Length: 296
Image 1 (tube, helix red, strand yellow):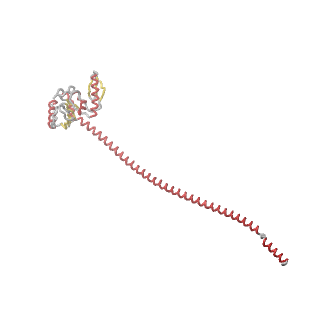
Image 2 (cartoon, rainbow, N blue to C red):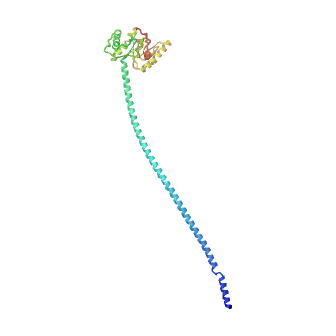
Image 3 (cartoon, one colour):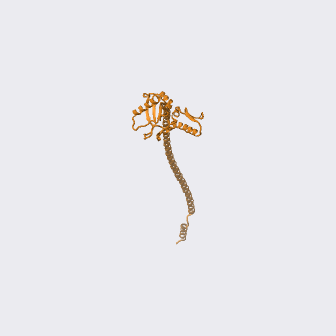
């Protein structure tokens, strides 16, 4: 083999065994590029994450806002409904108030009418009482007819006062329930106030007859007369001279108590010596008379 050939082979071998000159340069570029690529990738991932986060946050915020709007809308609807209901309730209450006011006005008118009517009725009662007298001591018969009782009363007034009241009797009523051996008082209503006044003025004529005539009093007048009687009894027990005259208690000539009533008191003068027997239902009339002792 020639030397040239050996030399060429050695050169080729050396050439083939030596690395290329640009290999290190190619390796360094790839690492830098990879680093840059990584940085780019990281930056892109970061941006993508930020975008995703923004999107997620915006989506959640939008959902929350939408939910809040729905709740507000629902609450608004509920409030509007409640407001309408309150308006309706207020309207109904106002209507009821107006109705109550009308009823109140109507009641006021009725009360005024009732007071007027009551005042008129009281006036009529007072007028009616002026025409009524009470007869004590008349013997009572069981199952006596009204005609027989009228006849007896007419005869009594004719015999004692010498007057004929046949055409003046309006109504005759006994007070209380029938009880044997007791004489219930008789309320006699006359059609003439003048006749009633005449009889009361001559009530003294019934003394010592077992009978007594007294004016007819309502409950209020009876209570007032009862107080006057109590004062009369107390004054007499104390040794004073006391009488009831013209609706007043007179002690030792001085008026010490008056009676706010319109009727006159003739009962004291006409019945000082007799005491009627009464049941529980006519005890109130005891205040109208002095002590009675009826004879049959």
